[in-house]
Length: 300
Image 1 (cartoon, rainbow, N blue to C red):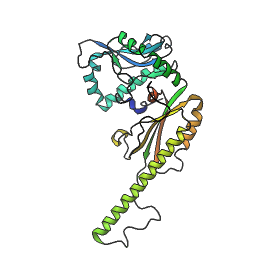
Image 2: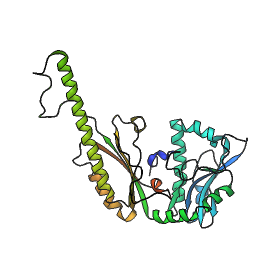
Image 3: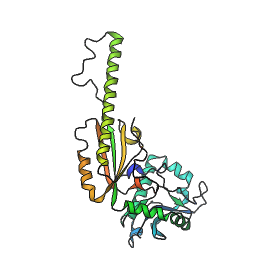
Image 4: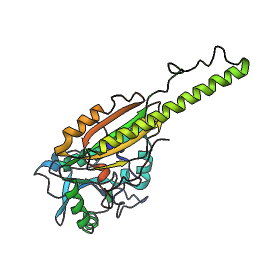
């Protein structure tokens, strides 16, 4: 599985599971290290796996911390690069954000090789092993229940964009130039027609995006919509209408992917970009209600 995880592993926002506990904020004693925790699992990683896996390049070897019946995959990282001030500066640079997100994902994937995993938000930091273990132990029942819910399930990310609006009136539409009113009135008439065509195309695109979402939900255990990305973040010149994640049973992956492959058929107003299967980042909140969609967001 290549590329960035769903939602580009955003470092903050409503998906944060636990804030950094015991992190020194702006205080950065020279030579001090912090404990970076990638994920929580219900089974210890295989012998030798943490040392063989890679996390942040500037950190030490990955290692395992036990918290009762749970295990944490962690890494010692230099405080000078991971204080609140340093992170705010680093993650404001797109290339650095991507580098940190990929490092975080490598650690989460390493933890997931042994079974279900609860990925923690990027930049979950603790001042010591004791702080990290105590924070997880205090929420052990929540983590245990969530691991059971995520067992044998993975996430699919689906982004739906509007296609470029038609440049001219569709076939069969009345002409807006020849025979129209002269001068400025003709210009206004053509501009009004173009706006109407764009508006109608956008409305059709939104309707088709929602149809895709309804079809995919029928083959998912749970679904959630994230805030649509801006055109600057998505790298596309058309609006993102749907930014959704679907939690799918491993046994039902075939049905889901077949529906996904057919989703664009007969829907000329949308482009669909899908990736997966992923570790279920979007469903790793103990307080998340799966019976209804969290944070319904649709492109306007």
